[in-house]
Image (cartoon, rainbow, N blue to C red; front, side):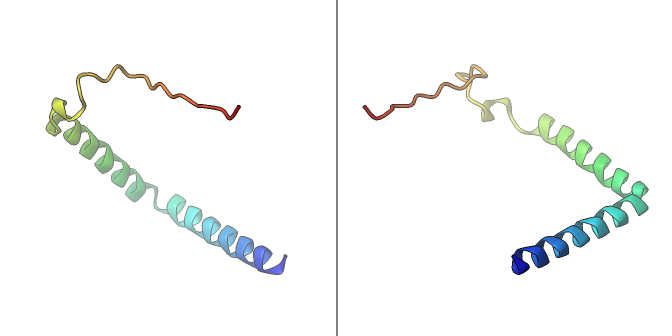
Length: 68
């Protein structure tokens, strides 16, 4: 299990470092969040309504055929 443990430890340390840096720059992270939120709002207005078919009824039906 050594390769897995080494990979897991490196991943954990990397994640911990990334979270630490993110928390240290809250203002910049919040600015990026607001930028993405505004971009989503603009795209909502820009993308034509016909992009989604009018037949879409907001639900999904699936069928499964089980072996006999």
